[in-house]
Length: 380
Length: 128
Image (cartoon, rainbow over all chains, first blue to last red; front, side, top):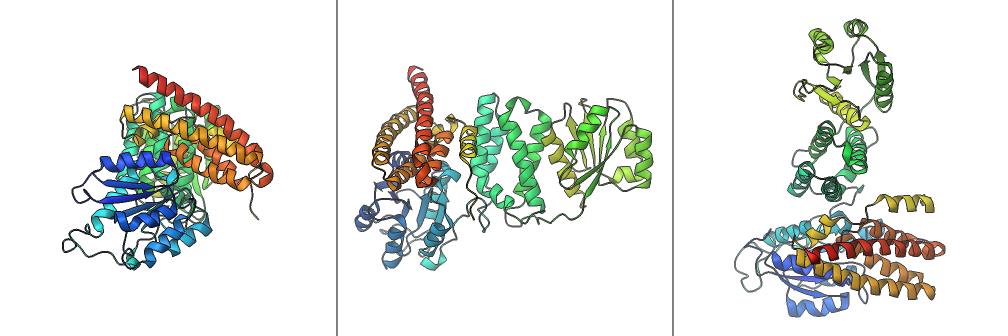
């Protein structure tokens, strides 16, 4: 976290909450920064000249003078105008965000959608790219012009794309996958959701029917299942969660994956000899973009596959029962993505070949997410 | 027209959140146990006082002050790893005047629950 480029820089922290001040003073000092803190806007304006901070962390809702007024004061003072200001607040109403944005903050972060570590990381990044300390103005890059401020990170569901699916989100996901106890698993899941909330919210806010929305919904279901029932976190379900996260990740970054809208339906052939399971699979895939057709025996399935085009085949299979082999031996069966519903470890999933496995007992969120992923991947 | 959630929906949303997520507190304390204990002490002190202030404001019918104070406490609660209390305080912040008292009493109960979880954490960690 700490960086020599950021060391010995001074941060002015403005927040009326003593607890928040305690948290951030400790963390910023650990990152090698000098920190001054004040608890209201008027005091912040008074201290700016004396402290000469390299960056200001500014709350909005404060007594005496609110954060927007402090920000306007900074941007209207020639000596301070280029100062990086990171607004850190829980206020995220449209009107306040607009007014704040008009006052040109460098960054706008919502406290409950970020973490202290992420904030400190952002501070260090901003300090590295901002002007050098006042004592050595001849070194380093020129100060950023006030017009060059970056747009604020959008809150969940907001209009603009939030920052990318960064290393912190990836690290949080690794914590989820590495958790060993139910408590640490839920803990890690919760923190992952908090960290990735702006990105997932951004996907959720895309046009209705787009894959971004469908995957965000699938992600929600997987999260609810895993968080509500950590005992259900089988390798099969965790793989679905990881795959879904990976798909959402590709919607960010320098070359974000397109989020096409899905028109029409994906016809799914469900092959399951057992009545109850067949009905259950059919119900799970009886919503959204899927239209299930179900059969009870492999012979009937082979006939249908020869005569029709399916976008996905879901087949219940036991070890060595050959149902899967017979389906995939057909030219049209081999081209179609397949999900094996099984209790056998024999079948190894492979996204490359469009083959996935859902372990019994079938978890609806697991089957739905994998079906969605395979159908999209097949480009249907 | 804004679709305000019903009281039952709000309550359901609040109760769906976990009481205490230790990992968030530990992150705030940079993984340092003594710092985490200090933060817990500070949080209890600050939030006890804040709830007293909120009660006084509520008794005199100053709903604006109750909302402002709840907003501040919600920020602390989120940083301390108390999502359920955070959500309850958010409900106070957004409640119309007629519902502020009810929302605040819910938040007060959630604070009792959160404080008990923090006390347990504090006692366990102080002993170890």
